[in-house]
Length: 277
Image 1 (spheres, rainbow, N blue to C red):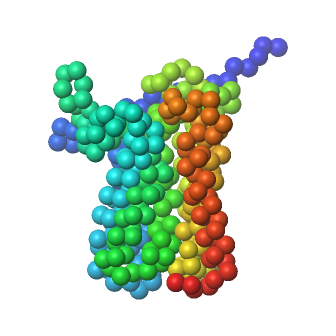
Image 2: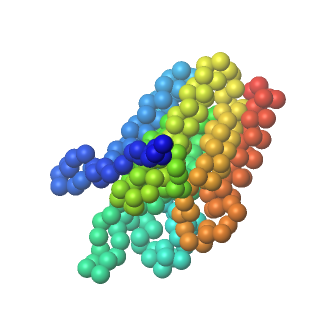
Image 3: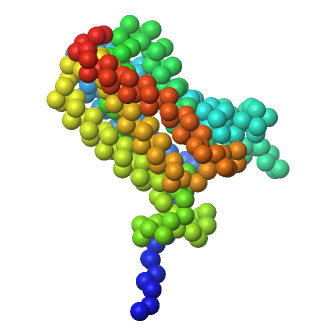
């Protein structure tokens, strides 16, 4: 009997669905926008449900947007390509690249979720200094919304054919035609599906235990679940930088460990304390 040859899915999308005012709107950017808008609407609902003034809510989006974007960009440059970007400082901050023919607009290619998380923490801390809201209360509410944003970003990575999985013989392997002709684990989709599931789980927990907001339980739940999954899914990914070759754990896994520890500690704190903040 002849062997069955797997029929892999070939992924070769256009970079974007349309152009606007002469600029191509990319799927990656759309995923970011949709994720941030969804997070914005969910946070607005939480503020209203918890009877917090909309005047305090209005500046939150800009703090989050800038914190995530700046943190994710600097995180990628510092954690994954420090040798290049320390010699190209301008490219760390602006979406341009120096080529033989001059400067070229390329968008922000390279964003690290760990850096985005750190940037978000700093931005939220600055926001609470301005609004006088409880930092723990804010972290819990943000944590309820964060997974849906993270899931949309990973969908954007899938459209960009980046953060590739290892070569696989599994029937659901994906051939990223813009990269090579090898079937790979769609690691971006694994993460996106997991983060959407974590978001749904967080909503269910919030509906059942609304009094836990402010205990850091939801903040811990978000960190523990996202970064635990991130730790294990890294085993199915190609290394992102040359220095990771031969490492037992890659950079993403080493960076995930402290977030996992903090997450589980905060969940335990939330279980033990009903309203500590």
